Image 1 (cartoon, one colour):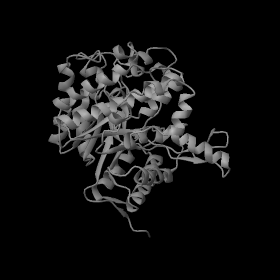
Image 2: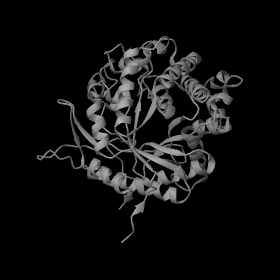
Image 3: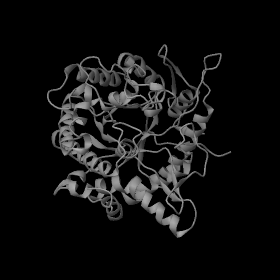
Length: 440
C-alpha cells in the first residue's frame, strides 16, 4: 500500500467564489448594473433565462457561509469584490454601503481565523464603463487602478488578485460571444486583452506604492497544450495554441514582452499592437508577489490546429479530465517563470448532484477528480514547484455564467428554492484532507 502524500504543515487550504456567481442582491445598497446584468437580460444569452439576481444569496447569508468555511477547517477564502458595489458607475466616490459589506465579510473571516484573499475583477465590469467602450477603452484600465486603490485603502487584506482569467474575458466575452459583453470580433478582443493586462499592472503598482508588505498577482487560467499526434504540424499547432492560452499572458507579466509569434498572428487580425504605448509593458511587468493558477483542462490540438478530446469529459463539455496536465503546467511555470510562489485559486468540475432520500449528496466523481488532481499537484511540489496553497472551485453551487444554474461546481449543495446549504460528500472528504494534511 502506498504511503499517503503529506503536505507541508504551513500549506494553505481554501475555497473560492466570485461575486456575481454567489452574492445576489444585484440592486441593493447602491450597487450599479454590471455587464453581466445586461448580458443576462438578453433572451437566449443564458440557459433557461437565468441571471444572478439571487444566485446563492451570499450577500445576506455570508455569516452562515463563513461558518461553513470554518466548519470545513479551511484557512483561506478567496472571494471577489463586485466593482459595481464599490463604484456603481465605475468611477468617482466609493459607495459606502458596498465597502461596508466587504468590511463585514473580512471581519467575519478574521474572527474565525480564516485568511481573506480578494479578487478585484471577476468579470462584473460596471455597465457604465462598458457604455464608454469597456476594456477596449484604455481609460478603463485607469479607472480600475482607482477602484483598486479604494479597495486597498478600505480593506485589511494581505493577499490580492487583480484580474481573474483575462483570457476568458478575451476568448468567451470578445471572440466567441458566449460571455458578457457578448462580442465576436478578434480585432476588438486583443485590444481588450492589452488593457486588461495594463489594468493588472497599474493596480499592482498602486498596492506596492501604498501598502508595503501586502501581496498581489493575477489569477490566470492556464491550459497545458499538447499535440494530439506526433506530426510536425500538430507540434507547431500546439505551440501556436500555447501562445494564445498561456504565453500571451505570462510573458508580458513576467518578462515585459509579448511573445513575438503570438503578437505577429494577432497583428494580422487587428490593431492590438497600435494600443501598446511606450511604458505599457514596464507597467504590466510590475513585479508580482504571487501567481494565482487556475487549472481545469488540457488542450490537445491536431495538425489543423483543431481541438480534439482524448480523455473523458464532464458535464461541462470543454472540461477534459487530465490530472497530468495539472502537474505539467505547474512544472512549466516553475521552469519558465520562476521567482514567485504559486497559489492554486481554482480547480474543480461540475457534476449532476442530487440529494438522496436521506439528504446526503454523494458526489463520488468530484472526490475522485479532486484526489487525482491533488496527487498531481503534490507530485509537482515534490519535484520543485513552489505551490503554497490550494482553493477548490467552488465553495458553493452558484450561477455558472452562460450555463445559468444547470451546472453545480460547489462542494456545498445549494437548494436554490430555499437557499439551504448541504455539504456534499466531497466537502466532508476535503475537510478530512485539510485536517490530516494527507492525501490517501
